[in-house]
Amino acid sequence: MDIASQQGYQAGAPRPQARSMANTIAGGSFSESFVGAASVALAILGLSGVLPFWMATIGVIALGVAFLIEGAAISSTISDLTAADKAGQLDITDIGGGMTTEFLAGLAGITLGILSLLGISSALLLGIAIITFGGAMVMGSPSVAQLNYLSSDRSNISNIQLIAREALGAASNLKLAGGIGTIVLGILAITDLPQYGFVLIGLITAGFTMFVSGSALGTRMVNLFRK
View 1 (cartoon, rainbow, N blue to C red):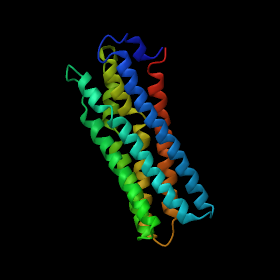
View 2 (view 1 turned 90 degrees about the vertical axis):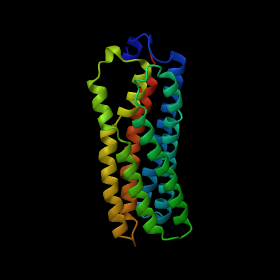
View 3 (view 1 turned 180 degrees about the horizontal axis):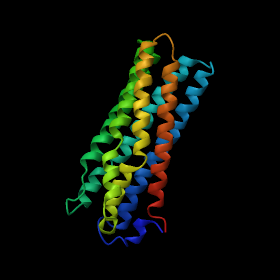
View 4 (view 1 turned 45 degrees about the vertical axis):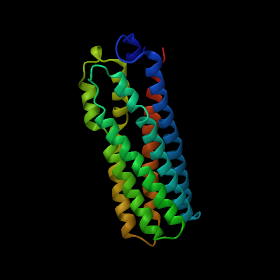
């Protein structure tokens, strides 16, 4: 049985409210995972010689949508988390900061992708978008929160805190490593402006990272209330 089920839900938010928040996070995570996989597929097609510019541009826009969805889904639960945390024991800062960064990165990526479609310094803007995505993944990877979660006393943790810590901790190390790699590829893309190879490889790196981390987090949230 899952640890959240073992708690009996005596503390924190009522079970229906906690389940709703977990489902919201799961929905955003699975959507992020799906769009991340689509970005990987587009990038592979581009590397295979199938309309590299179009595959790179559409892939950047798609990845921007993935960041937007994930950031919006988790950010939408913050007010509920704050309201339910009567004791003031839940630190919302890390959640809000990381998800706001991903949300803004998504908006930036979509904007840069559209400008690239219009032919405005396309290669340069795509490289900048890749760097932006990498930076968002690094800033959104809650490695410190994961350590706090692993070292916490789970016997006294409420289900509302457990949801937040699961959301912060899932696949954080993968996001950190993937983000750093994506930044490097974005920088290389800017130095290799006539080509889109590094942009496409960066899309594969970022898309795969989001696919794995989104799937892990979504599955964890779904299983959180499964008896």
